Image (tube, rainbow, N blue to C red; front, side):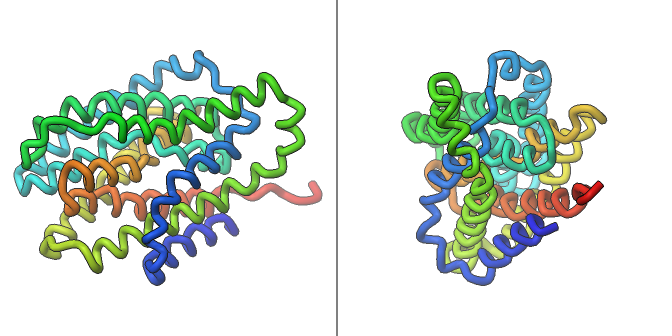
Amino acid sequence: MKKSLFLFSAIALGVLVPQGYPYAYLIRYLIMLILFCSLLDIKVDVKSALNPRLVTIIAMMMAIAGITAWIGNWFSTELALAAFMIAMAPTAAAAPVMTRFLDGRVDYVMASVVVTNSFSAIALPLVLPLLSPNGQTSINLVGLLNTLTVVLLPLGITQLMQYFTPQLVKVIQPVKGAGFYFWMAAIYLATAKATHFIEAESTSPWIVIVEIAGISLLLCALNFGLGRWLGGYDWGQEMGQSLGQKNTLFSIWVCLTFLTPAIALGPMFYVVFQNLYNSYLLARKPQPKVGV
């Protein structure tokens, strides 16, 4: 319950005190610290990356993106692209942290982070030129590679440390608990950035903002619910987080750089909804009994 209150507080603080938005660039480094803490004693092997359930996650990303973009286009191009960018967002770098808090299989979710981020980085440059209303024909692959670095650098460092300096890993093991607080800081900055954008920068009519918020909420419920259903009793937690907890920072960067600020509102709203849902998961998690 304590962790849930921290999460709600970080979101509320971002809405009520958005003055921290200029420091949103720090989110990249906070995610790297989160991953470092989470993966310090986790070995990610090739077997996890080849898990057939990851094929299902990617297939669902493409199917949901295509269907929601097609339906959204009945209303407006902005709504269609917002839905597409949310659905195609890869698994969040913080998803393994959440999975650890929920006592799930961190190695599977970490493999989902690596595989889905790589997939989105390859797929988006090929697909977005066909969907973009402004005729964009290319995407800066260097920028997308930088996003992958956020995942691959801490992953590589922790795996090398486990192999070459296992004693050092044991010595710095206490820093793992700091990952949650790095996560809180990242959530505050992301929420503050979204709040500032809506208040000071957005020029879209409020009805468009409401529509984008609605599709974000719908996709959040669909992604988490579908993931849990596909995973069943044994894998529901892991597949729910892999499909539902999105790397929205990746999507926001792509939207602001290559599309329009209004489309970026989709993943910005998703930040709030997915973390509200994660707060609920933390709140309902059974607490260990003391003295039994």
